[in-house]
Length: 465
Image (tube, rainbow, N blue to C red):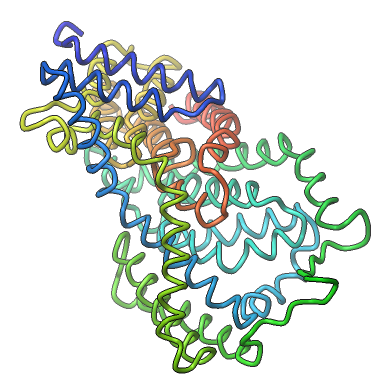
């Protein structure tokens, strides 16, 4: 750590302050802004430089996160358009037979999210699951926050942590570690499954009291979990009710078409989200014109305003938080502080790598912690080359040890930054679709995810190395 500057230490203090603040269940916006300002002053040597850094950090973060803004806004817009016809009720009706209780609702969301996420990554899975399964799960008595927990743990955590189908994550990790992709895929797949099962069971049991209270409230104290929206004692009839079946069918065709296109044209990542968002906009237009006829153009504008307004309301508080952690990345730091600025978070990770012992629990948990730290930038993937390279150094030529250590580091990086416990990652999309505060979702996930990663790491040390 001799190469650390005063700004490095200031950044470390800032990260620790943010972590402690989150543990204390306080909002971290003010600490992030203040430390962003302090780092700007220290790096640029002027008060005005610190003020400029605050704004530049937020702009850089907003630019990087805007795609998530858009997909949240478009999918909320789609839901608003479907509600006008009652198509949302038509879509969830078949699921009521499966979701008879909060537990079955929780399990169905987990299964659906994991399946779609394994095939197409979690980003396009979130809005699909949100649109189709969350309403049914809520009617079964599962609170919105637990719907979000289920989606995050199954998608951003378990499915992406192993990435055993698309193999983007294990491919990057294996290449850096100098081992075969198959070795990392197998080990990471097992470890992420252990982490997921432990985390999901722990999360449900920890929130059982809250789940029961919500179910009782939704049920009104007796029989079934059916919720009927009423006004003045009369059940609401959607304005475009006669188009409900058509709109529901149109959405199903859209989803099938998107899925088929993803397979046929090998569309992944951001392009997959773009395809889904564009198709959703077309469905919104058709639905609006059907219901409102000549006034459909104005209604589309209203729907979009509602959806994007919701997205900005949900995402807005995350921008300054993300800005602080973007300073830690060598890719985004120059855009915030100026040309030549280092990635402070990555420098800390490299320093840790130099002092970790070679094998056993110290090496395994050291790589886990290092992976988690690299995931704090909200990416998850950006730290994989670092953990892979370190695993190769610690493995000493033993490919089994190297692959296992690299898999542990991958689990730490993806589960944190991919993300389940980092508010400025794609987790914000999960919170936005479920309509819950993202920081509340982080708090719900933190202990279950920590428990899952610890159990998985212990299993790796005892049975895989």
